[in-house]
Structure formats: C-alpha cells, structure tokens
Length: 419
Image (cartoon, rainbow, N blue to C red; front, top):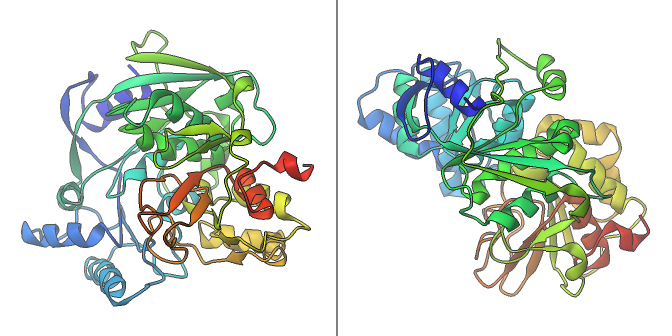
C-alpha cells in the first residue's frame, strides 16, 4: 500500500484499503476558521448534537477576517468564541494567540505524522508534509465529525512525483509545486494523493515541504503527502503534544502515475493570471509592472520565507510605485523575525508588517486590489478577483522573487539586484 492507504486503513480498523473504496475513518484533528466554522456550528446544532466528540481535537481559528475587519466579521468570529467556550474547546485561538491556521497547527504540534486531519478549508492538505493524511472537506462534514469523531472518504489513487538533480539558486519548494501544477494542470491530480519523493525532497526543509503540500489542491489533489524522515522527526519531536506514527509506502505499490522532474532545469517560476497552472520562468516577465507585493500566507509566511525576503530587500528601498505588505504566519514567527532583525529590515525598506492574518490572500482585507492593479504574491491562488477587483491581476511566486519585484517595481529576480 501507499502511505496514504496505510494511514486510512489504520483509521478505519482494516488491514488494507484500495483506491475507490468508500470508508468511514476516525479523525485525529478537525479544524475550521471564521468563514467556515459558523456554517459547521449551525449544522452541528441543527442535527441536535449535545456535545463534541473530543474537546481537545477540534481547532477553531479566526484567521481569515481577523483582526475583525467589520461588524459581519466580528459576528462570525464571536460564533467561534461562544461555541468554543460553551464546549470547553482547548484549541480555540483568539487574536494575539492565533496564527494562520495551516502554519499554526504544525508549529504547535497539534497535527502530527500518521494523523487523519480534516479541515473546512481547502489548504488543509498542508499537513501532508508531516506524513499525515490531511484534506479539506465541507462545513457539513466538519459538523458531523465534531459530533462523531469520524468522516467518510473515498480512498484516493496516488500519483508519485520524483524530483531529482539539484536546485538552482533562488529556487524553493514554491517553484517546484508551481512547476508541477504548470505541467499537469489545475485538474491534473483530481481527487488523488500527490506523493512527493526523490533526492531533492529528501533534502528539502520542512518549510518548503509544507509549501508544496499546501498547493496540492491547486492541482485538484485530494491531498499532498511526503513520507516522514529525519527532517520530519527533527521538526516534530520538539513540538508533539501526543504520540505519532511514521508510515511509508511499500516498494511494490501501484501508482496511478509516476512523474519525474529534473530540478536542474527548473528556474524561479511565476504563475500568471488567472490560474496557478499558467506558469512561466521569472525572466520572461520582466515587462510586467506591479502595484503591490504580498509576502506571507499559509503558503509562504514561515521563517524560511521571511529570511529569504529580508535578504533580498536588506539595505534597499521598496520601489516608490509599489506597496509591500509582509504577513508573518504566526505570533511565534513574528516574534522570531523581530529577534532576528527581519522586521526592522522590512520597515527600513518601507514595507508594511502586519499581524498574522489570511486577509489579502482571499481578498478579505488589508491589501485589497483596485481595478487595473497588479500584485505579485507568495500566496496560493490567482483566480479572477481573488485579491480584490475582478479587473485586478495576481501573479504567484516564491518570496525571493516577490521581494526582488518590490524593489524593481516590476516582476524580476534577485539576480537582477546582483544577488
């Protein structure tokens, strides 16, 4: 079996499961945010459930419209707070303690290798980087799971992606996943587990692994996953709040497809409007001027990302025609960036540094685009109207390219700055 099949089998008390099989599996962690949890809470109450299945396994995180941007957002966030207090949930994170959910839960040791995790947010697939089966579901499925501790799944087929060779300068996990989506398309892995392997993945940092699995959904994937190893163990052992289990894939497993990439041929990659699959090498886009740069989100708001961005803008100024907004993904990351002097570097470059929030990524608040404006962002989606006006444009890149573009006033690479 694949790692995905082994995890699912262990959670439905079966010796083995097969692609296409319908199962009911126990879940280890359930999460929802201030957009999706209110729907789940209403459905939970509608079915007459009196209590949650486990007050220590449900994470409610107000991060999309928080800090609350208006009265409606405040009402949404209040529903999470009231429900959490009513049921004594230990994993409710108020503003000041919260972070962007998909950065916060791994950081806090709440999601772990071998887990089955569901979230009412499509980027729940992020946790596959730890060797967990993690996937986004609808708010009604979350409501049922909050009451029962279980969720139904169709066991997905798996695609094995092998990355070999060596990474070029300024290329990271973001470029690998953008290149992959550009190759297979936004529905190239529809309802499949995307298993990332190879010598390049073996050396990839946990931050970059989280980035890759985060964007599996952008290829239509049910999940992204990486077999846990020493890098996983180093990350998890100091954070884990409970026991965890490492699963792997058998050598004689049958995959739906096996796709290989020579990473020495992959350059810093940018997804152009208005699909994550519309990718081009950064050097083909130097004629594109920009109005806004966003560095952060559940895709690229971690320490590695902030360090890279700061190394590019250090001693330089953001182009006068550009606004640059930096969103550390969690309070802990914000504090560490402060201690390392990164926040000062961003402010000296005349960028804005914000408290953790998903705000601009979904066109929620704190960075909305006007008609005709262009942004380059380290986020995960660039659909029409994603970051504001339907006639605005969003380009997706890694943090190094985004930071260089902020200085240049157009899309460009750090190499153009002599780096």
